[in-house]
Image (cartoon, rainbow, N blue to C red):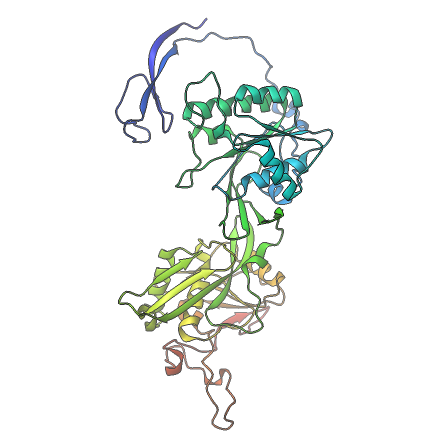
Length: 499
């Protein structure tokens, strides 16, 4: 038998760290004044062995057919989950307010319900009538989808006994409280107790559970870090509320890979899966426009073609503006410095510069550096890049163009969408059929894809010359704003070719 003694207990209200004595500052999260007494806690000195509930078996004799993933009816969510929901799995979905978490999970609850597999949707933030209005709008009315508005843990467990669902959706875990635990809903102790009770119920019943989690102003999941350790899968729902694109990223997954990304489109009629989301990030034009360049970014293992736009104008203030949207400001500033020093484009330092992406996509990986540099050079010289051109590569401070991961996968995606030209670092690997690839080793070679600004011909006034008027790599065209422009380059498409 275990021998117990009572002793005072103190717990940090921010991170949940516990101690036997009071401290003014929490050693775990370094917060002041957050350690509070939670009453006497029993301390277990010794624990005697008890009867085994289920004997240990060789791993080869354990039945694995009961934990086969079942489809949720939403292909993009199945992609991130690794095939679907595993019976007994607990999934935590977190995201910013208004990003569409409730809309997505209500759609999942309706599509996953069936006569053999009823679904229970529990809302703690809205009334049942409000959820019904959303269900009418997105077409999520199903006969075997049950709806309850509860914030009491014991009442939710009672609903599980009454409905016996195969899938439970709780929106959200921070709004539910247990009457046996002191503290307000959303506190460390309450979140720990609610999550633990629901996880035990899921494992015992073989019921899949989807929990909605709040996030802090820094984007981290609110509540104790223990919550992320307890659940089986952690997903982040991302997206700009002013754009249609939504991304679901896997952060933790005990049943599959964590480098998958699901793409969704949020609209008035609800949320739909996007099997081919690249169209949201492109602007189709009949004629090329200066200051635009296409690149291929990797979201997890999925390649997406995105467009980078740049605009340079004369500054009217002593300190020129540097404005970015969808790009990292520090990364753009570094590329500007490389273009001025290594690319010999001196006019950028005196101009207001604006850079943005199309469709609300965020480009944070270094593989987009080359596309950002070419769009800035194109905007500065007012010269459009060749049509059907994509650029992939990382730009270093010495002006070198470095290799990036997944070049072949990026080129295959660009070729699938009809792009025929690509600017890549040296040694890209196998080139897709029909794709003409130019390998560049530094930013100077990359800038040569910019054609010279057309000049008027002496023999035929009104006509403009093509690439015959291009200057050399180190020469300066006075009409092109100081950019080094020429039409050369090393390329290959089964052999050697130029753009």
